Image 1: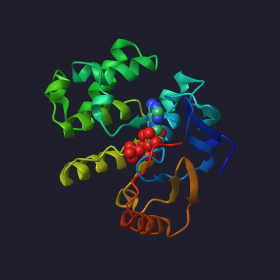
Image 2: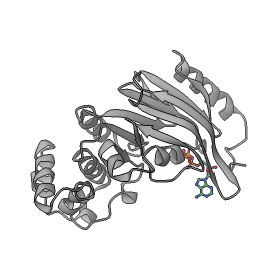
Image 3: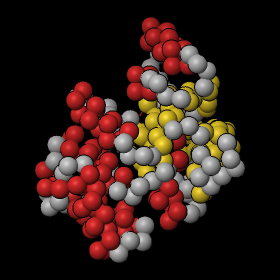
Image 4: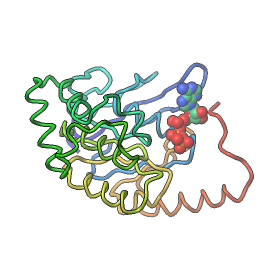
Length: 241
Ligand SMILES: Nc1ncnc2c1ncn2[C@@H]1O[C@H](COP(=O)(O)OP(=O)(O)OP(=O)(O)O)[C@@H](O)[C@H]1O
């Protein structure tokens, strides 16, 4: 891996108040498909937000393609995009066009350039007729697609997926996955479900805010077996200490 390429996570720790959520994570990741697997409450969403630079870490830093995603926001939004589990957390504008234009404007594009890029994106997804649709009227699957269009319009090198397909039906998942595959971005996919990460080139296991294992060939099977063992007991995942 070349210096400055891929994702470098250096001594990353994060606390919210007295609560330690992530601790001492150091990883160098540079594969087109990277999976982070972990059970509920292990810190996955917190890690996703730190990787996208949306939250400043308590300690350490994240460099993506050499960009410190927390410190250099203008470069970060052109380098990394994020898709959340719940599209309602992402969509802020009343119309599809405004929603897609927002990130492009943040990148410094003029109004006209942003509109052209939004139209091109809608056309690429076969959704030109959505341009003036109100976001409120979209179904859950359609809202996910809008988020994907808004993020891919910015052509980021990396996409962080925080379980964006949870709760979607099989055809919608398949269609959205195909769109992602053809976006040209490298993907870092965070999930509790090993099936989401089947075939991924590099997998890390996040456990109670720390990396428990990385990249073993049978890591997903190992994780699943451990989850079945834990599920046989009565302890639910508890709040972080
Ligand atoms: N704002 C917050 N204040 C206090 N604790 C928080 C906050 N956000 C997250 N936590 C705690 O941090 C831990 C990790 O949360 P996080 O949402 O990152 O986990 P997760 O792996 O994404 O969980 P899930 O799979 O259930 O969505 C949990 O114990 C949670 O209670």
